Image (cartoon, rainbow, N blue to C red; front, side, top):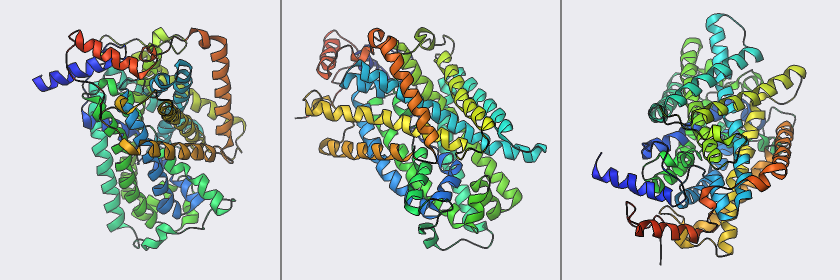
Length: 523
């Protein structure tokens, strides 16, 4: 190991020590790996593709031309505000550590649980998306008809493969995440070039991409357009993974914030290019919107049977990589929360595999919880097969609202702490927004409130009911036990940023490896 790398490891260890934690996880991820895990979870070949029919049905072609850029623009505000906090407080607990430090342990506890709810939804939604694509393709190969039961079986197998690989080790997963980032870019390029040069009867004119006023739902267009935003909004979730893997990243206070922000920015640009060509290849939007899977329909019509099937298999593989990354992020968050005794049987989920140095039990709990969310929905749809909502819309809406509420809480608490003088410029990390910090945070919060309302209006009110039930359960758990028994994260036992800075100075004076402040002190 080079002297430069030794210095970074020592400095990163000291940064973690001042928050009260030992370096337990293997710190081996570079900047690209940290970016890649968030880029892979965002996965434009998962969210934008699996919900393509949802966006097309409600917003028509204009959903791709206008809806995607609008959502991406505001999500970049959210990502920037989160990146700034990741640089200031570099622990795997991320969102809930930020909330606990900026306010108190109970705010941290609620943030953690709301984030967990969102993580359950995103893992279930991603792997269910893989199953929705893989099962019909497998059905064509093996001669069976895809249905809800076969999709659930495929979903279970996919979850198991992700659990096994995450259990085996972070090095394998990190390499696969690196490969996944390049794979996504290559497959988008293959898809774009294929549609540009081989679409039967050519592409529509560019103005078709920005055609508004056409909806294939029973809602007025403006209302339908808002419902259709779920397609883009769900795609832009999970980029907090760069913060959850921060204790496994070298030089995390710079690399993790860039991982958060650039994963959104690149997904915006590459995703828009992909959606543009897919939409311009549509010949019958009404038929596509009315099909079982709009994306499969459009690609099959544009590229033909065999060639179209090959492209769809390549897209499905990209979705599989996305699910692999999401389990990594979810399990690290659960590990960090259990380490602070915030969950039932916390001592189990906080255990690290001695052989693989991964939070093995947390990984398998993440698998089980994600399966149960989809399984409960399967039972509901079996009992009530005429339900208006779709399983994928239910799972994705749960993840969007859960994650974005969790994203918003520490951003709001930072603004409050700044107004009260408890969070100051000297507390910022090396990656910060300077004089634009408050403006960016306010815009981010306005968007979060807006989008969380939009995601649970009819026809997706079932997601709202599920989230309300989960929140009620959290309140009961808090009042019955955790209010008096949750010790809070070690990172927040010293209740102010000033105390954390003081601990840093004490560690330096005691001769801890590495010198220089972990925070950016400005005049």
